[in-house]
Length: 131
Image 1: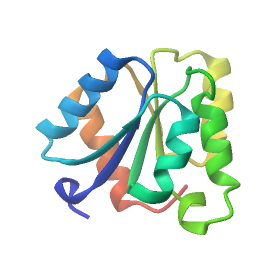
Image 2 (image 1 turned 90 degrees about the vertical axis):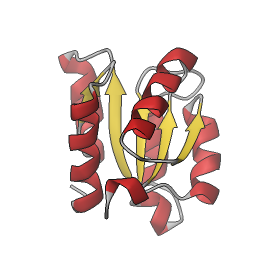
Image 3 (image 1 turned 60 degrees about the horizontal axis):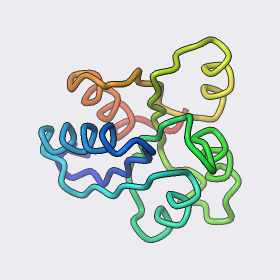
Image 4 (image 1 turned 180 degrees about the vertical axis):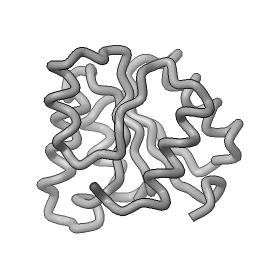
């Protein structure tokens, strides 16, 4: 899939960072973008928006990114269960990575994401198979 045809959901509680990521996606030519401020609202939105890739922060309230992905992976709908996910966080601690990486994602981007890194991770997810 060409990156410009992708449907991307950005799950980020910080409005400044959310806008930063959305603007970078637009710079990459992506215009089908949906946003959510936490995992709970994202869970509701993925069923109707059907993103090709979800970019999610890890540390959010009331539902963080790890719980959000765990709920995606156990969802009754196979399309939701198999959604491609990339974590984003300013926290690159070993403990956080140990919790995040086994959830079948296409990686981890340290925030704020560089445009080149965002593009590379998205292309990997869009053209790869679920890990």
